[in-house]
Amino acid sequence: MDALFRPLADVLGASVDQIKLISCLLISYPLGSVFIRLPAGNHTVKHVFNIAVTLFYLVGMLNLWSGVAQLLGSILATYFITKNVQGPRMPWIVFCVVMGHLTVNHIIRALFNMSYETFEITGPQMVLTMKLTTFAWNVYDGRRPVEDLDKWQLEKRVAEYPSLLAFLGYSFYFPGFLVGPYLDFASYASLIDESLFSTKKGKEKETPGERRIPKGRKRVAYRKLLVGLAFLGLYVTQIGKFNYSVSLQEWFAKESLLYRIIYIQLCGFFERTKYYAIWTLTEGSSILTGVGFSGYGPNGESLWHSAANVDIPNIEFAPNFKVMLDSWNMKTNVWLRECIYKRVTPKGKKPGFMSSMLTFGTSAFWHGIAGGYYIAFFFGGFVQTVGRLCRANLRPLLLPPNVGKNGKDLPPPSLAKRVYDILSVLLAVGITNYTAMPFMLLDVRDSLKGWAIVGWYGHVIIGVALAFFYLGGSQYLKGVQARRVKKLDAAKGVSDTSLPRTPGAMVVPPVDIAMEEVDKKL
Image 1 (cartoon, rainbow, N blue to C red):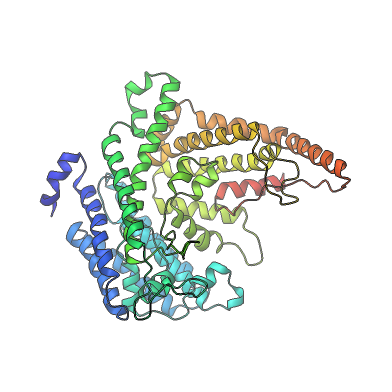
Image 2: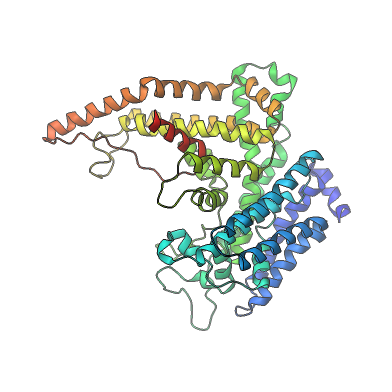
């Protein structure tokens, strides 16, 4: 099989494994169209189809015979444990088994110094780890009283234990098996029986006698294919010149500091195009199978947002670091929040320092054992802390003083607010590109050298911001805002001087919430 792909790999300057991986992602498009045309009532055929396609990818295309045996071992172990072990310890037993297995393979990869151009089993195993641990929690939730569950747990609970064939079909669901994103068992089951295509209001968009698969699926899917190929083309043609490893080369150190900082911004973008490409390609093939359906728009058009793993505009033009993280690898964020962050928090208590640190550790170990992952995650936590402080203390000063109290529509932004928004985008992108350097360089020494070559600009920005806020800046800004509110209330004859707060969605980030706990204790 390698001989078939080697000429193309030589032309593109890529490894054979990379070409085979992209070929698998592209083959999933016609196979996705075949899958959705399988008999609606024959669930067995659909499960077997998923298993057969994935085994063809792993064995026929990628030659991962031992990898298949390892993955099958984790799958069967999860099926046996979740079926036979009762009680609250069951999901944690599954977690230890599959996460421990993944960590061992991460260590083996590091010991053999395998290049990241070599595709081996840890990539699919990372996706499978999320699927298996999520399944364990879903089964556990299916055994709990309904009144004890939150909305996500209630929607995803597995009340009726699946057959082994159905579980294998879920585990080997082919579009997202190699690089993600993962899906939960409830979503897979609704895809198989086609209940996924029922709207939340119960109004079926179907003609009597016809299958209820919404129209518009192909249009969305093939648009994702074009976007994915475009980003793949950018990556293939530009990554040789714009990549983080240039920060370790002698010629780069001879350039001016400003040149180096600007160049690293370009490197950050082109490094991300690889992930944009593969995740957008898998999203498109998933949509062709039917996954991703999220209802109908106001004009009756079908919507397909649920299979997305990345929101590219919200990354490249993120107003802050939090929005960027929420838009990156979104399915993994859901996994960390629902299967780690919430689960390690004692019942009746709010998540705190310990919940945050355990989530941080899980995310780091899931990615691998390279030191670059850990220093990137750790620094990212402080970045989020600064973002939170800015939103809580600085942003309100650029809004009308009564925002957050009366719920009225915001007036057009002032010049100062527009400048703040532009600077926020530039800083968010710049800090993101800086934080990601260790994530791609991996080695701690190389990572520190990369940061040093760009003048530690990320540390300088975050350090100065933290010093300002914790050495009196927060209190000063809150005082200014309090005087603004008091002045407005005095003009209206209102005595309430409570401070408005900027609302925000819950975030999983570990260090950020840990810092909030430190704030309270200080």
